[in-house]
Image 1 (cartoon, helix red, strand yellow):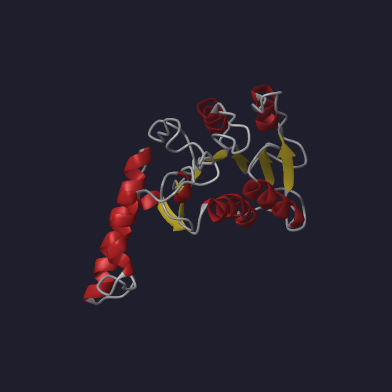
Image 2 (tube, helix red, strand yellow; image 1 turned 90 degrees about the horizontal axis):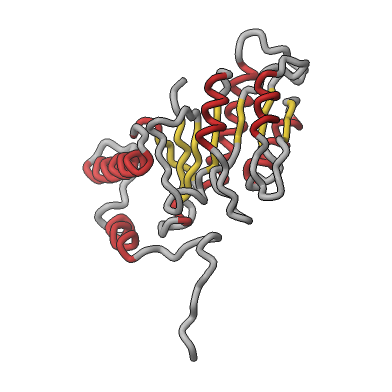
Amino acid sequence: MPARIYLDHAATTPVRPEVREAMLPFLGEDAFGNPSSAHAVGRAARAAVERAREQVAAAVGADPGQVFFTSGGTEADNLAVLGAVQAASDRPGARAGDAVVHVVTSPTEHHAVTAAVHEAERRGAFATFLPVDRNGTVDLAALGRVLESRGAAGAPALVSVMWVNNEVGTLQPVPAIAERCAAAGVAFHTDAVQALGKVPVSLTDLPWAAVSLSAHKIGGPKGVGALLVKDT
């Protein structure tokens, strides 16, 4: 029987041997503790979690305190979008029942983002889906017009555009999008799940508010992700 050749790494990757080796101690009898517990086993687990947080932060040029672990990219995207909507709704002056919370995204986002945006609409938010060209690239001129808008929906509370498209591989001009959002004083979120490990991902000089990551796209286990959140 010929050896199997796996060519679907964009969907998920096998767990790398070094990752499996690093995980094994925490699947046995000596390192199973609750990281919130004060006893020795719990402290050992907490140290491992904090070490992992530092490693994730170092990989993208962020601070460890900005890393919040999730069950994957979907939960990270949901938290970013709906968290921004809730935060905007809770600000002083937000009018209950009016569509004053404005979310901007594109029609080619991962369904984890589009579903969260539709849920935000169900809760009373207003959503703008930016046009894209034949390659799926977001129209920056349209983004500029939305950022400058002061209509009934008000200025956007969040712009969410994925770094690399999971279906067709479009590489979005994330630095340009982030800069425009920063100039307008609007929070920017990017789903970088497909970008990490494939294109350079550095947050050091990028004006971002939230970034979603997932382990299983880069040789890690399924069910592990992170949302990086900047304290703005």
